[in-house]
Length: 83
Image (cartoon, rainbow, N blue to C red; front, side, top):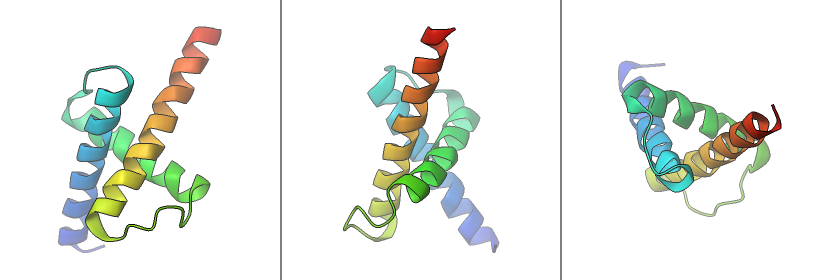
């Protein structure tokens, strides 16, 4: 992966993680936490929702990663309640 692709991936992860944090708990997780949640969310969305969104490009990637991050945060919240 070239440096530009890596920077774009980190930026998308940060934005998606921040958006998911705003939607789920009303607060972000810091820059590193947002990036991790966003990247994991993108992986989750890539496996659970392949090709569901008709949007392409940067906006489509951010929306998809945000949906995956919300799913991740919801699953974590459910697991924390169960324990």
